[in-house]
Length: 183
Image (tube, rainbow, N blue to C red; front, side, top):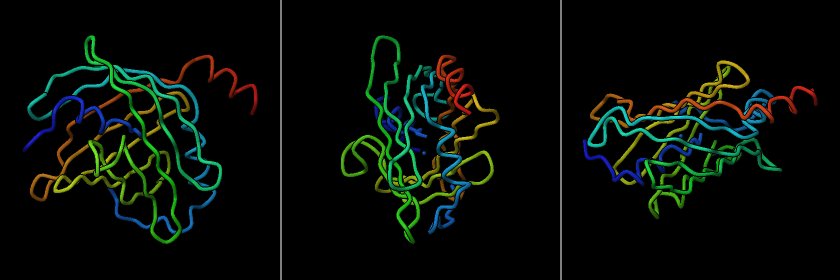
């Protein structure tokens, strides 16, 4: 497996960006919209590269989630740190009618990032299909409770999906208190 440099690997996180299933999200339902709204707010937490050349590399991310005004989807912006090095993170994903979910991490596959070429929301999780030239993969974001988001990024090796990055984010407690007060 040919792994990218640490900054490129971390770009995959935005995922975080929120990065699976090839299901078409042609007409995002209210469930999808509700899921993406649950990602709004400030998130932070640790992660680790779990496979490949940089296995064992630990990092910390601070991200802010918002939703687009016109379509189901999400935007995540912030930074991830490895030791004293910090890298800007950005992910933008929107529902695009019959073509499903589309978007970019950082500057997309045309630059140093990744393209989102599909995805689906199922229950308390979203799975996005990722692409960067010959590199194919998925990003799974699972919200087991309103204040926790676990993200796994996997790459396709032969016919198998191999997890390479895991992140466990917690919602900023100030935002959580404000959100509960609004509901």
